[in-house]
Image (cartoon, rainbow, N blue to C red; front, side):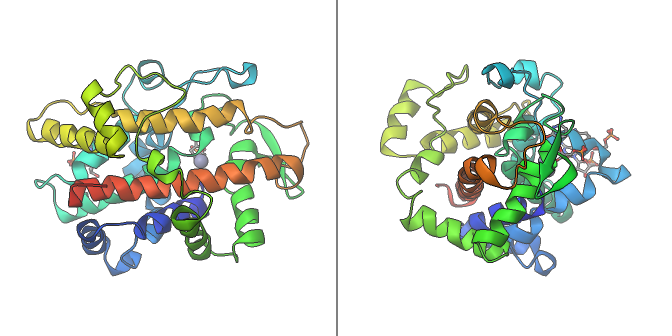
Length: 308
Ligand code: DCM
Ligand code: DCM
Ligand code: DCM
Ligand code: ZN
Ligand code: ZN
């Protein structure tokens, strides 16, 4: 996502934080970020071009080597993140670092800003796709502007900007407020609990939860997320290797599935920021931003308040 998408996700998350998570976020981010995950969400993109943070550029995505143009979408941790430098491993690393008492305040703030950002990027379908460098090498037109590429024109910036201007008062705060309303009492109300269950209807996972966890998941959405984070913290404390987590893999598979439906479904030269492509893409953008904001809050709530 571009800045607008990331800020929106951060603002959505901020409004679902439980008391201790909220306190942690406010203290850790401070006045510089207006005590909020919204303004802090773009930091990771700002630094990735600096020499000191060059190593972090590859952590914003996972190049899923699937075949979306022939209708075959998938994410595979071994195949797509074999070198351990992708968004799946980054989420595990920075989640562990957010609660690592041996780190100093600056390192903890960096870890929180990375978590804030990467839980957003994993919901962007083209950040979970290898084809043409996540669409960066596919020319695209947005609002008559032809010198764009699919990644920027459509998902990251072009469509999001148009959508916020057209339907949400032109600000990420208002857009986030509108998405929060949909989650609390609108079109997302009935599905939001399933967003944090980490179970996927489409993707059988090698690391699937145990039967006991699956049962408890039914009575308590978020149970798997909680047990997984407890395992992560334990691994960190006992100096075990930090391995990718099952929940982010489920989230990645969900975003990646859109690469087989709406994302690449356009004619060369077609304007992506109006007409049918735009109309089909906007509900996906709403869904993915709302979902990742809600998941980011649940993630931090488990870490700091012990429950979603
Ligand atoms: N680093 C990291 N994650 C990466 C790459 C590097 O945490 N994917 C850290 C490890 C080093 C610092 O960044 O402390 C500098 O890395 P490098 O060895 O690449 O200069
Ligand atoms: N770093 C990181 N993840 C790690 C280890 C290090 O992001 N697992 C980052 C934190 C600092 C930089 O690398 O920005 C240097 O860290 P250190 O001096 O701890 O190696
Ligand atoms: N990106 C991606 N997949 C790739 C390469 C890049 O999702 N294989 C993303 C990262 C940025 C955007 O595309 O959001 C532009 O990348 P860059 O700034 O590295 O050109
Ligand atoms: Zn991007
Ligand atoms: Zn990013």
